[in-house]
Image (cartoon, rainbow, N blue to C red; front, side, top):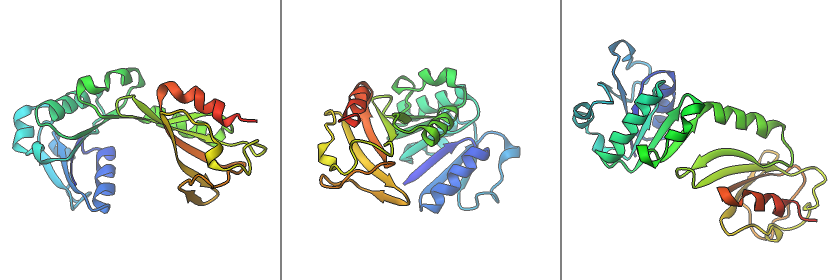
Length: 219
């Protein structure tokens, strides 16, 4: 997969290194010449250009990329990069970094964003996930807000203990995708029993989260 990353700061370089480690082809686009440091991510293609300029993106052959990640520290820049990538170059998948939570509402399909990643929201979700038992925690928004990745840790004394996954009366627009149990990652099967302190991860439409709560509160 070919990935273009706009912004070669600490975040952009870290993403690039991870993607390269996973055998992807990465291009880093950075307008500040002083920030061009090929030795920090040697296997990436480095391009000194303004990712908000159509001609620069065309010269960088952005249309050949499968994914564009707008990872600068400026939300305005990330929105412009996302819009150009989607509307002008028909990039299949656009991921954008949200720096200021107050701007999060802007990062949707109107601006060409497929996935918005808000660092403050993710950190808050991690904290909630670490301390919340029995509460549904939203970890990530998917597909322009059409669905969420949500997590709940079952109480130690859950009434669901020993009951099979098939007993969960989940709504139509929700799916249990993973059970985390101790150090194990379990892909749930209908006959698998639930246990207290299981961490359940669901992908669900926003409007059915209350129904998931009700399903987990079975007596």
